[in-house]
Length: 186
Image (cartoon, rainbow, N blue to C red):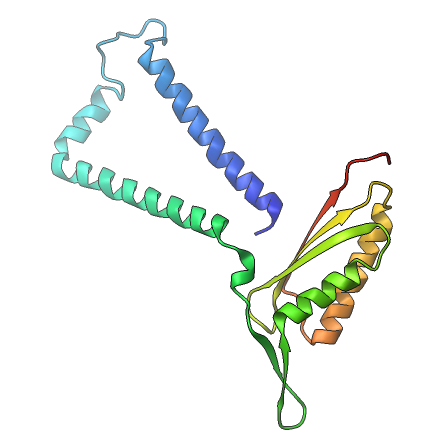
């Protein structure tokens, strides 16, 4: 999932929580004008249906709560894990003749970082490889100087990724590039 998708997902979760909190606040202050403060919040028909299915409705609410809690736990676990923990060790590719070529993934990542910092507009680069070895996901973060030309840096990053794919013998399944511009005079 890209950084933009993560931000969108967390924005939606935050908005749902804010709407729920505002609704609870409005109800607690009794602000709906013309509403009877002693009236049930859910309405008489829904309240009767809840009471009619008494043991099962409570069980269904508990199961729904547990499922929502598990989904939240999985979401947080995916957000808090470090992406470089998935692909460790070596990238092993069968050769044309008997034998295998083995490359350490940290060596590949450092080589791509060195290639990326070859452009004068790129101050620093960080590369993380995740996923399955034949088609790894490539996560790149580049820190640009304030006077860097973004079009030139973009082409440089794409050329470096093409060289990486050719050298490593594997095409990235997913490429995520984040560029940060250092503050200063443009």
